[in-house]
Length: 462
Ligand code: ATP
Image (tube, rainbow, N blue to C red; front, side, top):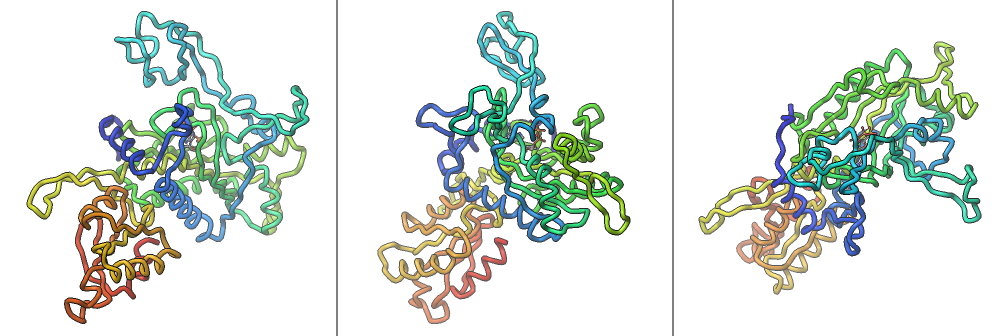
């Protein structure tokens, strides 16, 4: 189990710096000073995030026959979020400091930073003057339509604060059009928006973020069991993407701390360098949401069980994961500064990202030994074209091969292929049309025929 007390700010600083330097993550609008709580994924970050989302979809939708997908709209009708309780109650308690004009989450004061010295937390310094807490609704409101009247309640819409509500609202359409039988799930990956009082810890708490959610509908008597099963399934998923079980902490959220409608909630937490924090919630939400939407819309949302002839509102188990938080966990887990002895016998530090091959943004580097040799370049380019339809590869002909390896280590490329004079058959016919494949973690090299590269790599990156 992850240790709750460990933090390592120096490690986090190095990770943030690498992410910018190598193009994983940039501050949104950085050119103009940056938009707080929003992030842009650079070329490598975008690949990493796509790999995560694709694998999640493959495991939980494509490879199961009891889960189907949905891609709902981000703009959400006011009525939907009134019924779900978000308009009335999706808020955090906030306090203002009259001295420094900063705002803080009232329930997080002990972890917030105050500008006053020698204080650390808001309220600790003599000068601090905190107001009474008041509720701050976290939703972004907007108006729909060009001619809408300023005060027309029908024109008010929100950027969705979670992907779940469109699943509940479309539950009937999905079940009617797909002839699904309980238990079954509807999965969705998409952006959500929360006007967090204090975005912090890099991308961990953002105002715009992506969620990967499943609403798994079931009979009431199966809810508790399925919550435990989904917890296991999700822990297995984290292991498969390179986050080991011993870096996770499972919090069985006690009565009183859970949402009022939830009979059971597990938080899956990860040991980030800034502390153990939530990656995902697996919650048994009972029939709360569908009931609320049935009441508010006046449309029946019951399920008719053909076998037992019963009519009832299904219960739901919800594994709800943060995509950006998982990307951050993958990056934190992969980062290592390793002491190694180089070819000259000297100790040096190798920065390496140990992404599992299935998550790695670049699967394979392809290098001609020297760029001035036309045959080496031609064969390298041919290999690149053969692999490109199947995976993201990177062609690099600049500098010594050792330096090219280091550049790929730093972004977590698991394999590098070098085309050399042996490939051309210059050192004997037995090596002709073979290349060197170097493995990132062990740094070991092996010779392999070019014709075997594609199946060999595919087997390792799936
Ligand atoms: P927290 O307590 O950290 O605010 P939450 O319990 O409110 O999170 P949920 O509403 O359960 O979060 O949302 C499900 C998942 O969505 C979270 O586990 C998290 O991974 C992700 N998530 C929620 N809020 C944010 C955010 N502001 N930035 C990034 N990811 C988020």
